[in-house]
Image (tube, rainbow, N blue to C red; front, side, top):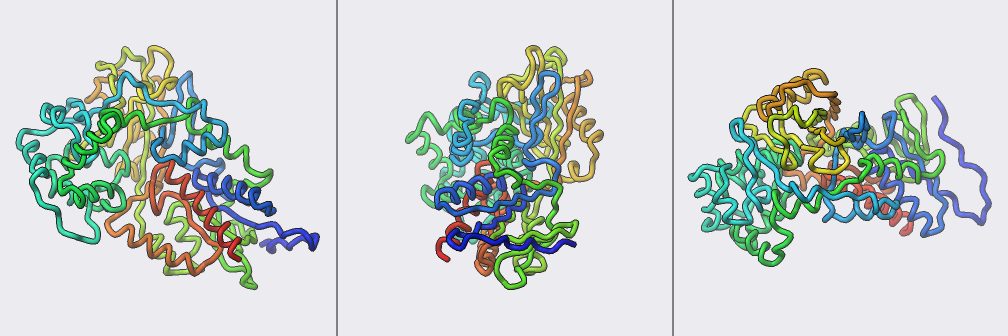
Length: 487
């Protein structure tokens, strides 16, 4: 076991370097490191930055691979541009010219109904319709199901409760059929979670706000369309213009962030096992699984909540319990390359979602080569199948590929073997915001107040998307810098 590094002698007139260790080199940790470096430069304070990660490469779930002219994304393949933090980060890194929007010619998606892919109604916004005629003429819901959705126009506001599951909200306002055939599969594509457990207030609070302000969710969406007719057409309409990626894949963002780190700051294959106060109570002491110790004035745990919980167990059992109580799900993607002629039906949209009631292994499938340019050579098709739940937890890569191919054969008529397949599995990587999540977050934030110099970042608290993770890292850096300035 090595001793903590000794503090080097310094010029009495020079401020001691601010020693900050960021644990986790995913997008939240990398964004945090960049913001820390910027704040140190702004205040002309020397910064001694260390970024530790247990993996062999930075980036976490973001990984881009190239194979035979195809471009594959192992984790997220895009992000939302109306949350500005990821876009601003790309611009700050000189990647603005690399930002790529979705294909404007095919901006629609489908939902599986039986063995048929039925277009999601134009203007359907995750939980409810914002346009009348496309919804009325859609084949997704039965006539009784549509009539039940229309009841939202006349129902009173729901009871005032502290929190409510997403399923409960959709069921009482729009009915069981709307939940099972539309809301559940659309939300699963984002959170890969059971809507019966998912907190509405923590995931889609705007729908609760609509009920509170307008009484009817549909009326609120219709009024929103009148105020901004070009931007509120929903899941199968103009909101697709909000999804963007990078021309060379999201790995380019990781690569650029990594290249801008101070020399020697990044240390891979360094799993942090515990965190404790330094012996004299001044700063922190981190111990890795190999027994190496690192001293720091401030620490950011940019990790899944369950990983952060294990590190702080010996420091604060209550904080650890709160973090460990945030559930996480496993997700898997299988990317499959085909000749266009191998598909009975040529993809003419961005993909499809699969309701749980269809009893399929697939959660969704993205037509990657339709969604974004440059993902497949001419005459070729790249599909990306999503699997989750117990299927992703228990199956190996070969079985996941077989399950994906079996479903795609039934749905798209793909009988031939793919040119190649690549499977990515991320275990306990997707935070799932259960009912009561915001109360748990408040307890975690209260717990952190007792530990100055310690901050959290990542997808466990206030947003699972790439922009949210970027923002969480930046806010953690700003919080620590503010503590130093107050001190």
